[in-house]
Structures are given as C-alpha cells and as structure tokens.
Length: 185
Figure (cartoon, helix red, strand yellow):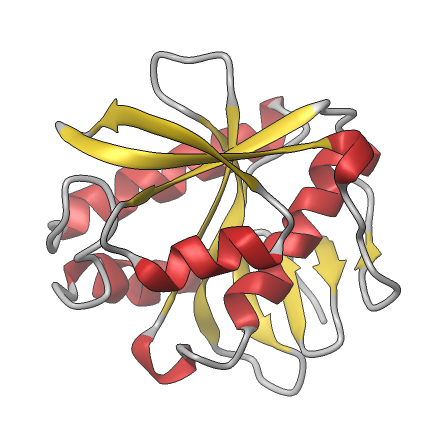
C-alpha cells in the first residue's frame, strides 16, 4: 500500500493515516444524520466540520503520539470510517473514539479497530489510562466499551449533553494476538 504509514493491522482491518482523497468520504459521513446521531451534539455536520477534523487529525499525527486514523477493510481500498485516540476537549484525558459507515455496523469492526487504537495508546504512546464517552442512549457504543474491558465511570457533560464515561487502565488492557501495530505516525 502506498501513502501514509500504517498505524495498525488487525485480522480484518487496516488503520492508516488519512490521504487527501479520503476527504470526500469523511465529508459524506459527517453529513449523514443517521451516522452522526450519536456523535458530539448529535446530527449531521457541514463539510467544513469534516475538513477541520481532518486538519486536526493530520496535525495530531505530526505533533502527538496518537491521532485518529482511517479504517479500511484489509481486502478493500475504501475508507469505511475512522478510529483512534484524541484529547477530550478541556481535559487532560485521552479518548478512544470511532465511527463507521452504516453498511459496516454490527460486524464487530468498531471493537476490532478500537482495540488496535488502545494497543497503540498503551504500548507505544505509554498512556496509563484511556477513556471513552458516548451518548447514554448509544447502546452499540456502550457495548463496544464493555467488550474492550472498559469500566463505567459515571456521567460527564460534553457537547451540551450528559455522556456515559468509561475508562481502561493500561494494566487491565489485553491487546490480543490479532493486532499488529506500527510506529506511531
């Protein structure tokens, strides 16, 4: 594969840095009200928001030891979503976050990608704790957090909403043999 360095390879997925041609997919995902209903304040976002996110993720990839990466199926070349680590606004906490396009829901991809991102955070970036937040009605993401071994930690307020907070300590993390990580981007 030419282009950005890989961040991780799992049994079924590749996490890699974003390429310029990925912008159209991310803009489409940000503009889909069903995909975005449980992200941020909940609802579709304009193309400018997607471009700002891509710019932030690109900057993070150059300046931090963690970022958000594009998700691709190992047997495909189309971006199917994103996953990775980002700093929570107005906090010193690092969050694992993910989003998948609708055709890829219910396949276990979010758990697989998030586990790879956690491996990078704990094993390469040396983080001691990683959190996740989700809308309280987002049963799918809450299930992913539990499958990752994350523990419920109450409620926090982000994006003018009460969100469920989960966390995972580095000592409790189990990566699994199916994850191959690469040097941080």
